[in-house]
Image 1 (cartoon, rainbow, N blue to C red):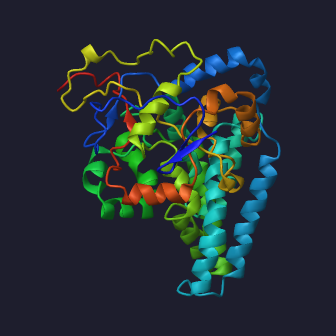
Image 2 (cartoon, one colour):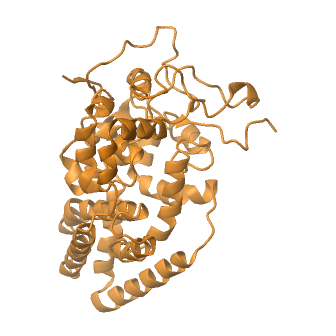
Image 3 (cartoon, rainbow, N blue to C red):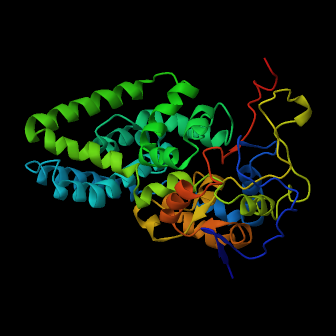
Length: 383
């Protein structure tokens, strides 16, 4: 039996809430923790308890066919709207309902490809990601992959995890108007933030991505006009704006309910070696920085969503499962969840991505600071 509260659902075997003395008020700094993230620990425990999970790993051959279909759908829509003004309601309705949903699917197909889950050979996945990028209109795939790999390897790290808002973003945008602006234009924050936080060297794939995309864009505009091309760009913007599917950006790692996040933090290590003795990535005594204040309790930093929108988004809602096993493709994440109920059923989860967006914008105690953060090992001391 699950219990729903403030947009999150708590499964079975819930724990008592923290003591009243625990600080649960509005955060004015990130939720700094010294504990290691639970995914590697839980992965080890799951493989020990369920060695059959290894059979779920590997590429999914159907991915390339679905991606090709979605790319063709977007190109067909753009062609059909070539004589429709971008100022018309018809254009924006098509871009929001069809275009944004399809483009979000494209974004997350590139996510699958960044884990080499469509083809056996990594280079085939990378080249196909360039093709997948086609209806976005802007070269994106080559840059996404290395940053996303860092996000998995260094979850919560203040330098390497560029999914976390910067301190400037959190300081300026942690009010209703700021959060509305952030949620509306979050696609730009995700696109440009990494360049200001952690630089990634250019690779041949970047050049291929740019050359192919510019060639396609020139061909499309020359043959079908600017209105048709604007359909791609507007769809991409709406896909990362106030759209039901874009709720996953915030749902995955924001702490929308601190009390339940702390409860979930205890449940995250259930049935693992760290259940009774936490494993730390940082020794608190080594940190001399005044901007870092560690919280005593670990707060769950990854949340899953098991609703219908997973159908359009490659099951990205099963996010705890994905972080535990990033080499299990979208088509087998439900099987992973089914095989390991003792690890997943009790974790807090989101019931609705739309409600996630609503709560993020309107709840006073939710700000851009509501993210778990870890000290980078090279930045332990004050300047």
